[in-house]
Amino acid sequence: MAGAITRGVLFVHSAPRALCPHVEWAAGNVLGSRTTFDWTAQPAGPGFYRAEYSWQGAQGTGARLASALRGWAHLRYEITEEASHGVDGSRWSHTPELGIFHAATDVHGNIVVPEDRIRAALEHAADPLRLRTELDLALGQAWDDELEPFRYAGAGAPVRWLHRVG
Image (cartoon, rainbow, N blue to C red):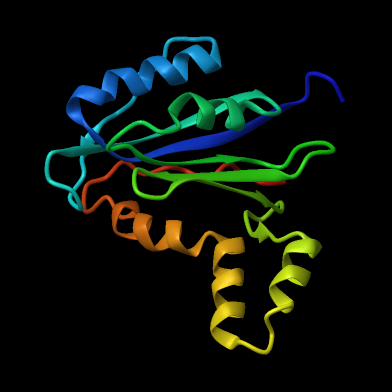
């Protein structure tokens, strides 16, 4: 379905003050309109700021946002893109130390691990530590571990309302 529209959220978990306008400009360039984020101090990282931005766009917009922000020093972010007609959802996670991680997601936001990744991990079933390592990699566990302290913005953070279903 050409031109199908989807939506998602850009979660900037931490950015130095000087980088904040550049993040807005990059997102605006991808989204085709000026974006203004509601920046708040990031309690998990003194001197850093956080913001959330809900977006709507063509399928693949999440990937274009992730590419526009990839590799920026001191920037931690996640991008979600909801599943839409004929296309799985996606999640991108980025940290300066680990780089970028991408996973397909189902309609509920759960990571979908492809069959071949599971089969490759099962090749190491005799070595439980290696099996665990392979599955953690497929699920992006290292990114979750690093981002978790930044996901909680602290008291007074803006609330993101969920879209009404049905």
